[in-house]
Length: 307
Ligand SMILES: [Zn+2]
Image (cartoon, rainbow, N blue to C red; front, top):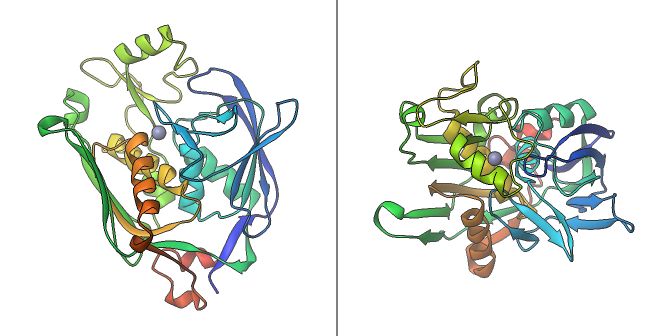
């Protein structure tokens, strides 16, 4: 059986929120089979649980925010991406503020945390959402067009294209494809950092955002070049970060997808719209498990070996 996965032990991190600049403690804890991923705001007078789902996403400006009543957790996408990349099904995420710490701006610190806690196989089948009919969302016309699509595929792959008219981005790859079957998430995707432009950062700060952002947790560009003294981690780091974000946004579905995702200039809002479009078409997907792990798609079968 291809089994669900959780952590072997708990692990903690301390950091600051990218937008709030607030200090925050994060504790990742094992959870029972079929719990899913549940954020718990432990700083509130009564702790509030927020289980991930497409409907729990209530704000997608700048980052993906999930809520339950008035309790919120902002910027969940990089942690969710690490969980998607390592195939974590069940997890409690205790958090002491309303934003996940940005750490180094990529998913690699979360990958490190999850791997050092150890990953445990559980006595329950891993459930996937397999896309059986294409769904698509689209916005804008001409040069403003953006779209995202899920199509049937026996595995999980993502292709993303950006279209930034900026000298530092133009000189790098603006399109990338990543297949989970390669087993290369940690090496090829997880290290890609978030990015921003100094002129936007100034405007965001004036509005009380990006207060925790800086050169140690983002790629920052002026009108001409990258300002980080040690440059880029991948020559196509920008578009790879968009794949990293998409993996996190799509993992908010609550189950891993078996599908091909392709997108042009998509973002957190459109990725969530795509999930809601999928869920609105009951004939476009089915929930599947693999009694024989050898029959699981490439990439997921290797996840059967815990370490
Ligand atoms: Zn991001």
